[in-house]
Amino acid sequence: MRGITKTFPGVIALRDVNLSVREGEIHAICGENGAGKSTLMKVLSGVYPYGSYEGQIVFQGQERRFSRIADSEHLGIIIIHQGIGARGRSYRSPRISSSATNRRKWASSIGAWPSTGRGNS
Ligand SMILES: Nc1ncnc2c1ncn2[C@@H]1O[C@H](COP(=O)(O)OP(=O)(O)OP(=O)(O)O)[C@@H](O)[C@H]1O
Ligand SMILES: [Mg+2]
Image 1 (tube, protein in one colour):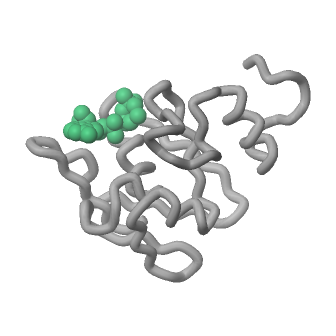
Image 2 (cartoon, rainbow, N blue to C red):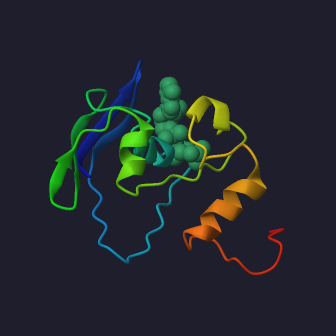
């Protein structure tokens, strides 16, 4: 992500943010409440489509202009939303379910969640 700036009325949520991730790396994005973590991931995943932010998303060497979540998912960019606000109905993707259990089942199927045990953590 290059030079990402995202504003809401009266708020600059992201100002010229750069993030580079290579295949196989694991990163944590940390910051206080309102720092812009969720907004950055929403830009990356197409929740906020191309044209609604400034800057560039480059994935596997190509600039990407996502219009919707399905566009980023198609490339394997999958966001597992933390909260109850991430309801399957509004996101329309069967992979992002309103059920935490279903999200974990799906996450473990792609190796992003431990598959052992019954998953009560
Ligand atoms: N839909 C929106 N409309 C207006 N302002 C927003 C919207 N979403 C986020 N913001 C504002 O943008 C800034 C960044 O918010 P964001 O939710 O990305 O932060 P965060 O780092 O994810 O915070 P938290 O740790 O609380 O989840 C905050 O000032 C927030 O109030
Ligand atoms: Mg957040």
